[in-house]
Amino acid sequence: MPDEAREKIIFCYNFPDQEKPWLFSAIDVLAYPSGFESFGISFLEAWAAKKPVIGCNRGATPWVIDAGQDGLLVEFQNEKMLAEALLLLLKNPAWAVSLGENGYQKVLHRYNWPAIGRQFREVYSRVLT
Image 1 (cartoon, rainbow, N blue to C red):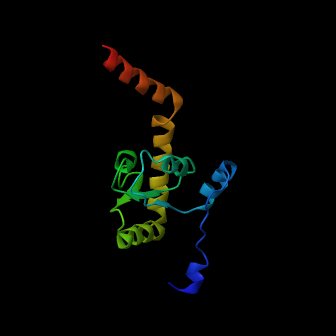
Image 2: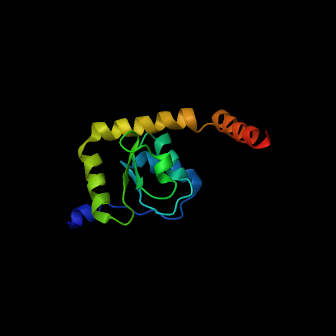
């Protein structure tokens, strides 16, 4: 990788929660290639900023990301596939915007407190009857 490209990469660790909105608004794509996610709240946070996401096809992530609709899924520990997914989104900004917008709509409709409350009530109703 050329030095000028490396200089554009910024790693942020252990930042305060109040910086999240700024950080998510500053990114082009959220690539979170973890293989051990129990849910993946970071994907929802990126979608709230209308950003496309890339996650691994492992753990709970495939249940959160609808591949090709609101993000992309790659194989865990497949760096080549991850790089290709990043380049695909960066070279197709209209599609990336569309994925981010679809994720935003998903957050608005599926991950809000009334919807979550309904889901909990449905589960409790099934268990108690």
